[in-house]
Image 1 (cartoon, rainbow, N blue to C red):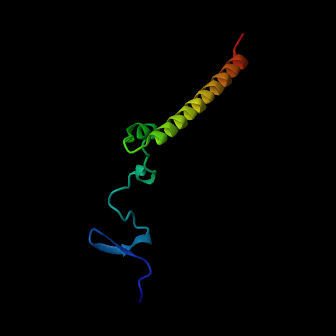
Image 2 (cartoon, helix red, strand yellow):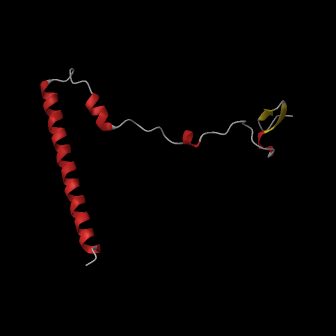
Image 3 (tube, one colour):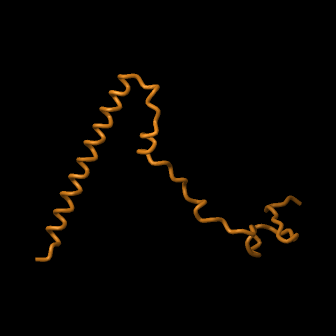
Length: 94
């Protein structure tokens, strides 16, 4: 007769995993094991990048890209500050 379910061995006793007789594994799994691993910070990766293999043109392109990113961050800061000021004015108790 073919075995339909895998067998687990607990304290020398073999039983079906889905028999409902309690946990199969003796130690519980850490819940953090289900979470994805956090990648490293992109800014720290950028700072650690080796610039030696880059040509002058590649370095200039990198500078332009970084300046564009700085402008994008400044725009976001301005928008957030404006939004916060509007919210403060709306909810300010007079």
